Length: 180
Image 1 (cartoon, rainbow, N blue to C red):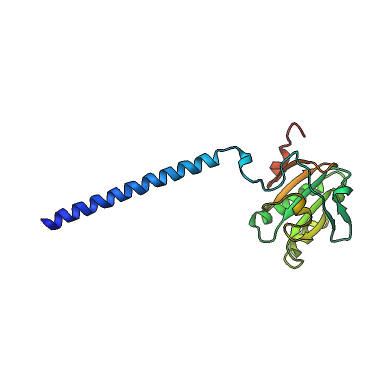
Image 2: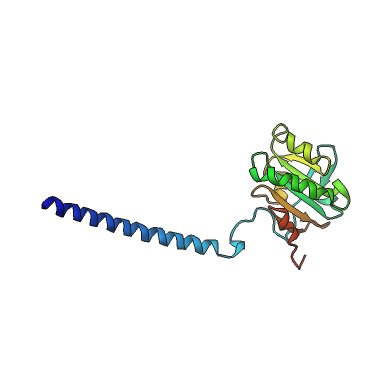
């Protein structure tokens, strides 16, 4: 009989511990839900948001063309890709297809490949026919000017360096704000 009493008390204590832990998990989930439903501006964006002006930059494309914030004379489509990014492998062909239809051709399309020459060789071959390709380290050049926080990062930038649309998908670029 004492064994049965101890067993019932043990099970009761385990149930109380489980109840306390469950209440803790529920509270934590509610806190996360509040964070996730907060204003979108509470989260750092993957790239400069629409309306922002890109920082200064100067670079040379893989085929020797100098580009900078001062050479933007027409709207430019920009894509930033990394060889380590699975989403980049999916979106890069879509970006290349969109780049084919940009008015002014490849001079109005900048593709930034973040990595070493060897790491980005395949991406470079895909993009060079349709874009001016820049190879740089993350946090330098155009990735710094666009404040890139993740990959892929896509942006439409007007001739004044103002971001018209941005995001990580081509659909994000189709959502041009009314004030743009």
